[in-house]
Length: 374
Image: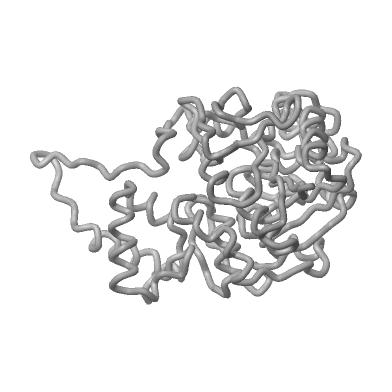
């Protein structure tokens, strides 16, 4: 028997789900985490979520459910970090395919329950947009979370919804979420982070990294890459809250609207009616403007021509200048992703800078964040 969990939003939610599972049940408790292969364009240049046919090397776990293993690989041009997570996390990973809407997802969840011998499903979301009402001006990616709720309601399982790190994904403010959440189920600690600590050496998830940092006692203003405003880590940032499915559905009108959907196009239209936008349409628009290579998380530094461009300053000087500018805005911590993308570092340059910082100024290393000087 395995515990059955669902990472509500894709991207780095599987990391948080594995950490919450380890905190509540122990890191050695067998588990299956269902997750979307739905990542930002910096990872996967193809808009929208991936489905099993976009991968090689998945393992059948039911008529439609497939498991992701370290041997799984995305078919180009698609990209995915799930095979790496399958190698770095203890729970097994099952691939959710939302292209058959909430009803198709419900079938996959039921198959997963049969595979695990489970009669309960725990949905986990980092940040709290699983409880969004659709009117929040900072809301960016409500569809995956709402589909998870709608699908769970179609199953025969007992379902609980967990919110970890309210507000850390910069979509629904902490102040909006806390009155809806009640008392925390658990406050995560440093020990709870050990099960996932190593994945941040390569995975660019920011919300999960903030949750880990908060669990390790870091407090203060942190700058991320995609959010319009910094995130402040507070005493409630490492908290995990639990709600019954019925309460989550009551709070999420998009999830109610998605009931009975049979394909992803219907789900997009539901999002447009409730939230005023489709995040997949936004991804399509961004993809037409720029298409990052799927095989590289971060863009390489430009190669200046000696005849047309000046020689760039050394890497450490560039970082120091950037750090001073960033710190002047009131930010005390930054994610690795923000450093990499704003300085346009490739893997080699980031390894060089990270080694330099850890060697010359160990206090900057607030893993998985970085503390700015001053």
